[in-house]
Image (cartoon, rainbow, N blue to C red; front, top):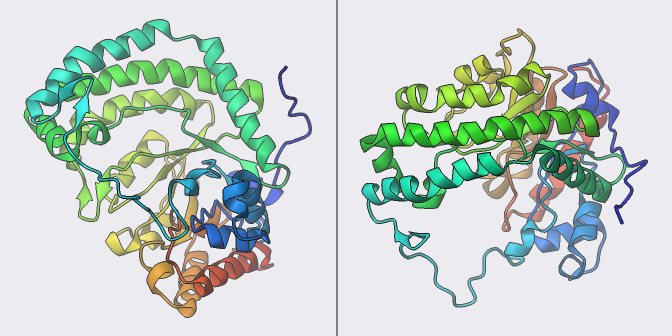
Length: 378
């Protein structure tokens, strides 16, 4: 029997106004993902051990008590991957050779060999077997299930179901993948092209799912393209090998009114103008200490000359773990005062891992709630 989701809309007017760039009071709160079990329970008003016993209910109560406005990535079970104080190996050892389909990825040539023998045929088969109706149903069902769990007041926005070509460093390892990228660019571009062929038919289904299911048109794209020094592969090679395939994947959705925001890790400044040219409407997550110029970004416009949608956050790599409550207040004031106007959300820059002092978490939440209710218009 299919579960009914009638009546669970998750509407949040403040967030909807921010997404629509409608002038409003206060700043909505984006997802604040706290991973320390003790803190989740404390914010939720739960007993010690409740998160492990009933993780989803406890986690969502934590979000509601923070007064989160929007959730894109549903992460209620994510902290189960670690203990209260962080990752606990329990004596297990990690590392070793990368093995894919029985192939040892120990050279750039092994990357090329695996792509040609396994990945290329796999993508061609996925295109051949793609069932649009099933994909539409899958997207609508998944998004509605997550919205049902979040309940009223927290708006579920899009994540993960639009696709585009990605760099396969997570599959093959950085060293051998990027050597293959440099030595065999024609093979890498063919991989981007084949990924794009599947992404296009998937994304057409996703557009239909949004319209049929009345899903949020705000969607976060997430793929780490930079480290603290800059773009992982260099901007020039991306312009030739990756960017044309990325752009053609997302163009139909941009024309259909989907508002894509891009997750930023590392120093992504070189890529930002190009992303805006493709129709990206904003950005989420900033490593300010790596050179991400928040003030400059917030003053930029979309290709349609609109203000950006910005999900700004207090730094989880610097300010929250190592700063003082006064540092947190200062950073929040800076983010609020230099944001783009009605399209601004506040939260944390990424996941908050265990070890952040409780006083800093408390100050963050108090600040978010203050700015959410602040009567001063931006």
